[in-house]
Length: 141
Image (cartoon, rainbow, N blue to C red):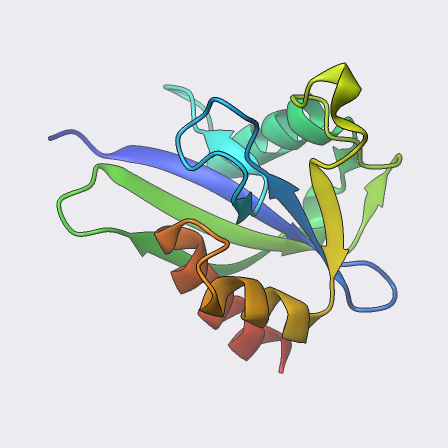
């Protein structure tokens, strides 16, 4: 089984809230909250992939100097290895670009660390994002 690297971002605003992206209807883990990001393309550096993925999913430009590695997660027997970065500096207003036009903006949400912990605790996030949440909350503390 070949390893599939995936990058994800925890965007943190000036109030200390974390941006989560809701998985679009029809996708695996549909409607669960996750850290936005995506697969690293062959020959692509992880940070480059994160900049590209966040621009494609949220329509914002991350500041590469503002990326801080937080943690990683991989499930047993799964090929995906998710690398989580935190970022407090970006340009633009995040939008859920992959959500249907008529979804009313339900694809994004800003959450306090306690609210993120609650989402993880009640199964409202994919399993690997739950692992990443534990590391992010420790990193934020």
